[in-house]
Image 1 (cartoon, one colour):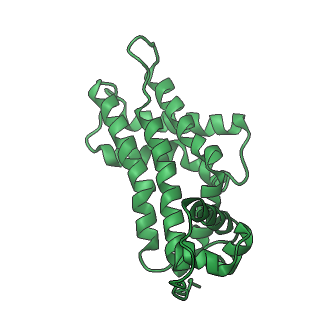
Image 2 (cartoon, rainbow, N blue to C red):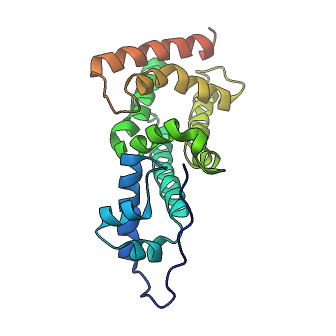
Length: 221
């Protein structure tokens, strides 16, 4: 099920303010997180925002384009958070071994689940609706979010390798392996943060993943 184009807004209607556009975008994000793409309509957004459907159309035009904009903005925010995580390395004076550094990195990576619960609620819906999304939506989402985050993580792992601690030929591939081994089990077990795990359980899964990653990439393994 996909959103159908809305009628063209009335050219004589007042031009929405920036605050009104932001309010509609926030409402669209909340409804998308609660109901998924196929059930997020202009009427549902209007009800959530406390405005009329005409006001939603005036602020956003086509509902599908509004949802895409909300999704890409949310994905970019998570990617920016993960970019900050990726560049944060121990300082020159800090004595931190490689296992601890990678463990801290994995836990910091997982912090996005708590920092952006609404985004990951959207992700859960999109995963269920993936075959019904409009053409191009999944690709644009992946480019704005997961792929950008992977690129930033690859830069971090390349920096660690350049310091002589890891033996990495393909940093992008190593970044994929790092996520698969150290955080994916937590993400799957918690259903993208919907059912948070006990800290002890998370710590065990991360520790096991870091151990496996080091078996693959530690220098002189």
